Amino acid sequence: MAAKRKVARIGILTGGGDCPGLNAVIRVVTKTAITQHGLEVFGIEDGFLGLIRNRMRPLSFDDVSNILTVGGTVLGTSNRANPAHFATGNAADGKPIFEDVTNRVIEHITDRQLDAIVCIGGDGTMSGAASLIERGVPCVGVPKTIDNDLMHTDLTFGFTTAVETATECLDRIHSTASSHHRVMLVETMGRNAGWLTLHAGLASGADIILIPEIPYSVDIVSETCLKRSRRGKRFTIIAISEGAKPKDGEQTVNKIVHDSPDPIRLGGVSTVLAEQISAKTGLETRATILGHIQRGGTPVAFDRVLAMRFGYKALELLVQGKLNQLVVLQHDDIRSVPISDVADQQRIVSCDHPLLAVARSVGTCMGD
Ligand code: F6P
Image 1 (cartoon, protein in one colour):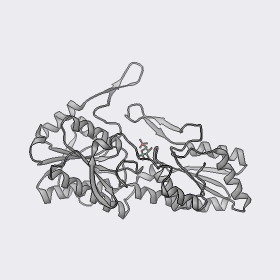
Image 2 (cartoon, protein in one colour):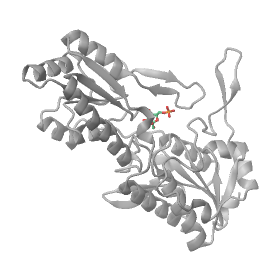
Image 3 (tube, helix red, strand yellow):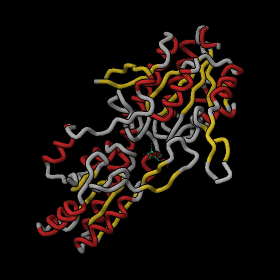
Image 4 (tube, protein in one colour):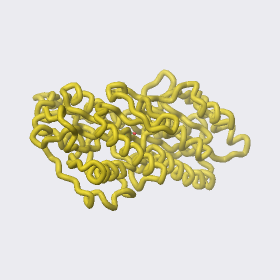
């Protein structure tokens, strides 16, 4: 297909759950492509869904002006549209029928004469990109997610903003917990990775931090609350990941999104644990689930700059013909790794991560 010729027209899409900083990438890629390299840019709507349904539009310099500070994505996104595994309908029993619609996607890419696609997303989006690459569509990836769980990058953009948001919420819970002498649980997102909870928990001085990587003991958590109470500390703040689970127990599933390639949506563990702590200790407990608040809003300055560094590098790779790479941050250097190295993998907190030692050094209970 057209990929063999010099890159002249590119597509750009944002896939998976949104996060602050997506527009910063769209802006830098589009502006640099047009002004520095004379490329044409097509904005693909709603992630891979736009490629499947042939929904894309040319992007001009003006189209991407004034979006740097805006949360979300002006292109829209979808976390249910992997071309290699796309729900095209329902069987008689109501279960979705998945099909490989990559041929359709390639037809649309060829019709629009796109030479390469910039895919901004997490592990699911990189998995979609990897299947396009296998079929000869050149792609370059940019790592986003509030979960910070992509392999080979020290940071994804969006994470730092989400940490700020979760920290502010935890700080606010602190004052009401203290007034009412309650055990307050604050549930953060992050899927199977505890990065968001660990960072926000540390930053807000949470007394207990529970992450998916360290299964918790309900007895130890309850005893910690009681000990604080006996010492005259009449409240306890617990930062808990949506993916946290008890020892010998399972994660709490909020819903199954049947037509999604990654159907499990976690959520609700804080409510379950709040009841258990209350029953064991007699202390008054409340749970707050932060949910999608963590994904919304304007990106913090750090994420804007990181998003711009990533987007700039992605375009540099494209024009240099270094395709099928994901841009990454390693030791404050923007580098790249093959997209196939990160697709469908998650980077979780290792049990010897230095931040765990920091948390424990100030007496934070990790639930174990
Ligand atoms: O991957 C980002 C994320 O926000 C996770 O932290 C969370 O588990 C999931 O997406 C929620 O997905 P949805 O927007 O489909 O509810």
